[in-house]
Figure (cartoon, rainbow, N blue to C red):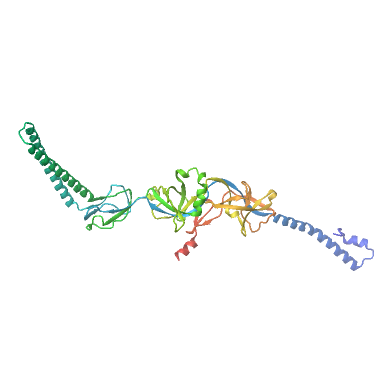
Length: 432
């Protein structure tokens, strides 16, 4: 200020010998103005200091990390039973008993149905009796043949008699063999009257009730489906197949059995299957190659198996061997038209805008960065609309993992720490 003095009324009177009211009032006004300016000066300086402090935008930062990953393409697949058998009767007869609970697990050889077997038992008894008669007759003819051979050696019988005895013995032997075969067939038919499970698996419901006539080879009784292990079929498109074949020499275990991950419906990719077969040529209509893999399907909680034949699955098919990659959380990435960027924290809490080349998104919502970032660099994950290059920020460190929530198709939120929550509004819309 131009004047920085403080005068009392008596000092003014002393200075001005002949004061006038106008002069006194002017001096008083000047003193008051100078005093007011002195009092306001510290306040202005404080406001300026606070304004400078507000320029440091509070943000959360996270260090980039590296880990070994594999590039995948997500494909659509389906589960199928390794074995599935339609149970038909091999003999005709009236159904007498049903010996299983629909939907239960049965072992190979377990009795499923029995037919009325009285006719088959009687036929078997008759065949066995015929066998005994033929055997007794054969023994008689063999004894007669021995006598003829003894007489022939003593020249007591003719060559013709010996040949007749030999022919009768051979004919009876053939008749006995035929009787034995008939008895064996009768025994098989009697055994077929008891219908057993041909494989280990889950049995379906009965297709016919007790008392109905079962026709040989025509009446479907039930179905048995093998459930462990289980096949997973998926189709690989031409682009993915070519990428896989280019990288095939770099795979360590591709020749021994390629392992793929798959998820049931919209669940997590927590199942594995080993590829054991692929078609020799692409489907000309779809332009895809069918792969078959085998997955274990043991009994889980509450006696249930996680997989059943016919499920829709999502398969992660590897297109690269394992390699070390730099990862950042998905929420740190900014889209600038067609360019992907992140804001990197520099020395002195400055900000640098960095253009990056992205790779695939990982299961934990971390994104692979192929170019533009090094491991350990810190990126800003929030307040991205207010952050500008060369601005000053006030950073707070976060743990290196994504905190973003992902909404699945079924309305379930999945957070970065693996916890889940339900979207009640989404479920309400489905119920509507």
